[in-house]
Image 1 (cartoon, rainbow, N blue to C red):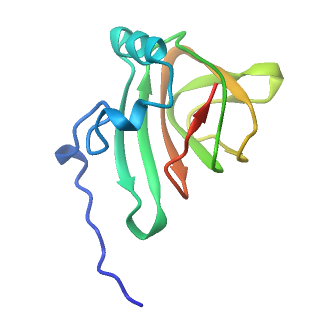
Image 2 (tube, rainbow, N blue to C red):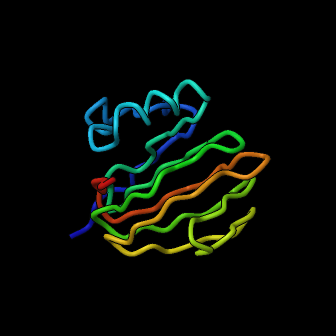
Length: 130
């Protein structure tokens, strides 16, 4: 079965959970989502199931803390700019570094002094468990 390509124009996609609406953040604690928005953290949900791919582009400010959590699906994070330090000495990633995290693996991280900009790839819209 052949499917037509889906073209995703970056500038045509709005920041902050668009295309999936507020339902896309229901799994995350409301307080964390509100804090992220106030501090300037933002996300574009790029691919949302086209050919089985899900991809987010996230930008987070310096020192922003993502608390320990896990997802229902495997994911790969690729840092574009800045850095992040994962809990328990798991990894310290800088620009161009990446990490693959299996489903249900619990992790958290803190963005570095220049913040962090990264892509997250998944094979499904992943639920969150805090």
